Image: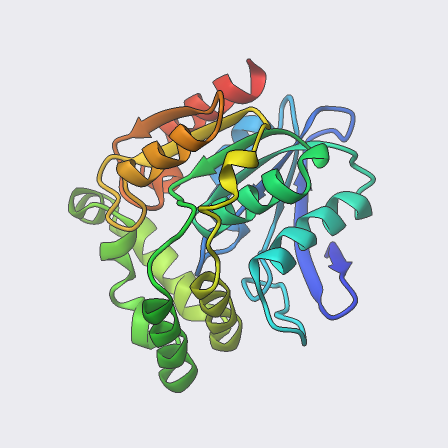
Length: 259
C-alpha cells in the first residue's frame, strides 16, 4: 500500500489516472476517509492524475506524536506533493479538508493551480463545541457520536432514499480511531482563518450545500466576498454534498477544473 512517511507518522494515499495529466488532490472531511471521493475520482481519472489521501488521524493514516493543527494538516499535503514530485496541483477539500485548502491558499499558493472549497468556512463551529466533542470521543469512543452523524451530514430525504450509503458512511465513522478524531476536533477548535482568507489569490470555487446546517450558504458567501475572483455555487444537499449529490457536484467540479 502507498504510504508517505512524514517523520512522525504515515499517511495513506491512493493515486488514479496518468501522472502525465494535471494533478488534482482530494481531501476528506472530519470522520471520513478517502473513499468518500469514489465518485469524483472515477469521473476525473480519465483526464487528471487523481491523488486522494486519508487526512492525519483518519482511515489508514496515523495521527502522529505532535499536536495536530491546521498547519500540520496543510503541511502534510505539501509533503505528499513533494513525495510524488508534483510541483503544482488543484486541491479539492470538503469541510475540514476545505479548511486545509484555505491554509494552503494562504501559506503555499505556489503549489496550487486551482482551489475548490466545499461545505466549509473560515471558522467552523466554536472552540467550546469542538473541545467538548473531543473529550466525548476520548472518553466514550466513536459510538458516542456516530449515531447522530447522518443528521449532520445528509438531508432527511437522502437518509430515507439511500439507507445503504448512509449506513456505510456512519460505519466508517464508527471505525475511525477515537484519538485521531479527537486530535482533529482539537485542531478545528483552534482553526480560525477569518483574518487571512482575503490573501487567497488562487482561482477558487466555493461549493455550499443548500441544506447544510454545519457550514451554511451564508458561510460560503462570506468566503466568496473575501476572495477576489472567487465563485460561489450551491448544490441541493446537506454537509457531505459530494456524496449526497454526486452528479451535480462532479459536474461543477469538472467544469471548474477543466475550464
